[in-house]
Image (cartoon, rainbow over all chains, first blue to last red; front, top):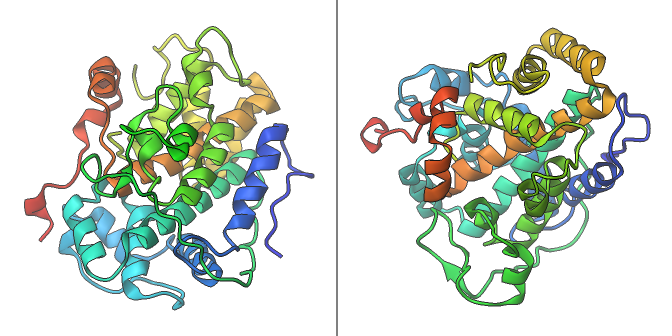
Length: 245
Length: 100
């Protein structure tokens, strides 16, 4: 139950994608750094449940999503505050604000839980979008494995770059060598408060998109579409998502 | 560059833009047609890679927005014209005054 395989995919899937995405998918069902496997599986299921939520539709249509109150259509497995984060990140990410983030984390969600939750949500978004894009059914959510979370928070943090703390890029260390090699963009820092979440995300990103080095190597095409075509697709999707990054 | 991509000079721009929009939208029939158009014009490997880019940016946009990661200043300056043409400069966080 809940495994992802591209063995009978309706389109040719590159070997690195066919290897990476099933690993990322399987990790949803494993204990994380801050969250249990049960919580991670429930977050993934809730992420898929957002479509059709009336409150999300009303907020999306409103001038300010923060002016609309109500109850989400949800699966009932998670605290209301967690459900609200998942629904907002899925349905209206371009209008999240730092004030909202501070209220969320002041209200009882630990920053590590929040970062890991985001990692699970975007794994579902990426895998589901990819499968749908190539004409394949989305995989079932993995079953939850036994075990406890394994906390792993970096010692050296930057608390000024983003809303969430990030691994400090101005000191040397093994995590910096792992995540910040080359000329890292700010986005490479986004999930580093929970290294396992960042690691899993970039395993997925480096295959679905390109590695940083491949992105900057305009003399070589690494995909069946060109750098220009890749950036055009990326720009259009980001415009639809109203993402300023 | 217009939203269709037709005037971008990029090969198969309109087909890929249509696919990108359909891939992150909810209209299954539109996506089926867009997928067929990509395969017919560029082949299955191109479809798979185009789906990968759309999938990753559908996710990474949410990472950036949910963590408050700022765009690098030099990147903002370099891409200002393209971002304006794509309409991205019109976006931004909701003013704090609109949250209440």
